[in-house]
Image (tube, rainbow, N blue to C red):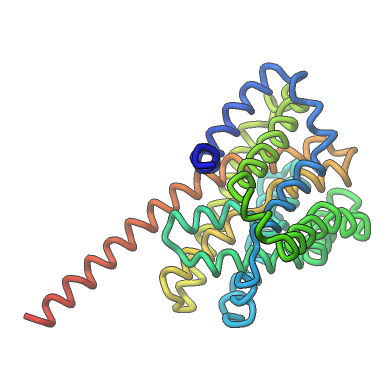
Length: 325
């Protein structure tokens, strides 16, 4: 089990590298991975189920004990990224497929990777987990409505169909995982070290499948998508952090909210594009690129926040030593 834990931690902490490696392989050998797009919802469901298995009863305490912090994170999550996506789609005059893909990413809840990055950045992990849980559970309502209003000028959006899709691939697997952990806690704890591996494999296969299926089209629009995705993600990280600071929250909370706003459940965006917009195949591409980019940018952001935290602690230590002299 120690070896499994070691490998699980290694692969989870290097998921961005794995995604890049397998994406490159899928690009040059598309037939070996394009089949995975037929199972996108299944892979995402497995990842969401794994997330549910890791949620404990105490994780819900933050929902009831810190409603102000959660509300701030929730409002920013479902305003900053959706509106930024819409503005970028207009500003760059994106095609219907790409505009839809960018908006889908912007309208999704926070991703579970944000919890790991928050931990690395020494942010408020319980708050991060709480925000992810709340935004995920409310995604069946928020995500379809936002996509319906923001993407409607590019493509026809079926509100009910999208709501059903989010319930199937997100809400049901997460709730099932929570229930199973509640009923069989000892059994789940015994295999807990395997859960991150399941999520890593699922996400890598989803993205590799998208790259394999769109290898030729990536050549024509890959650079543009990368630029838009990088700007989109940066807007989320910067505005999430800035607003939290303006509201005078503690630095750990600022870090958690900044990361949660900027890092999206891009796997859900890919799944929704695949299930609901088959006529717009390139709509899956922004989600695939975002999955790679936000892990890289999140790690950089964590390093910057760690430096700031270190300087803050050093300054506090100097002030304390002077007060005693």
